[in-house]
Length: 224
Image (tube, rainbow, N blue to C red; front, side):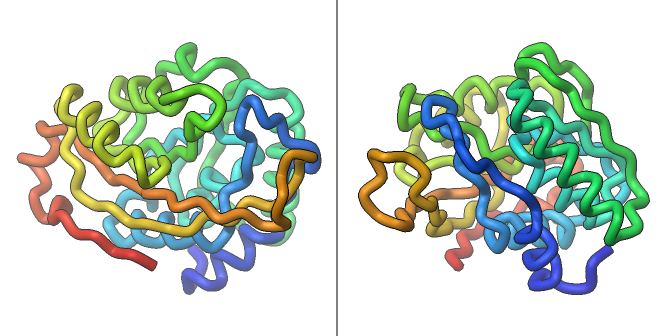
């Protein structure tokens, strides 16, 4: 396991990202510092080391690879885009050349709804719904069926939607963090070199788990 959050962020910043992302799929890379902050918090809650984790809509793999660096037992990378998977494989090769990875990994190429492995934790940065309203809903609904604990990124302005869908599916929001996600200009319609989007990161647990592990379910807000 890496010894500090800053070291984790540095290692994640070395990973390859999309050179020509598909705007319709909202293939925007997760910022390495934001990814490291979320993963560090999850590890502090003892939810990554020696646990099975699914990275839904894994893209080029930054969240799942970060989990491997934090000693996850196994990470399932779930991604349907073959170009993203090629970059993911390159990133896995890169990280294994520079670090001793104890955990296993498996790449599942296909739609998230075809993935049905039960895991301890889902981590995800799904499409925010810029092109299709509530495109992230499908990811949450899948996550609810395969894991008792979910950590998920969404636009901060969708807070009421996230709260409602969590409640409807018997999940309790226990932690919430806000970030300014930097998105670099990669398309002709982008007018600024870097555009920042206010995003929220929600940790939610099933109501059943909440009664079993109350020491991990203190609600708080932490803005970076």
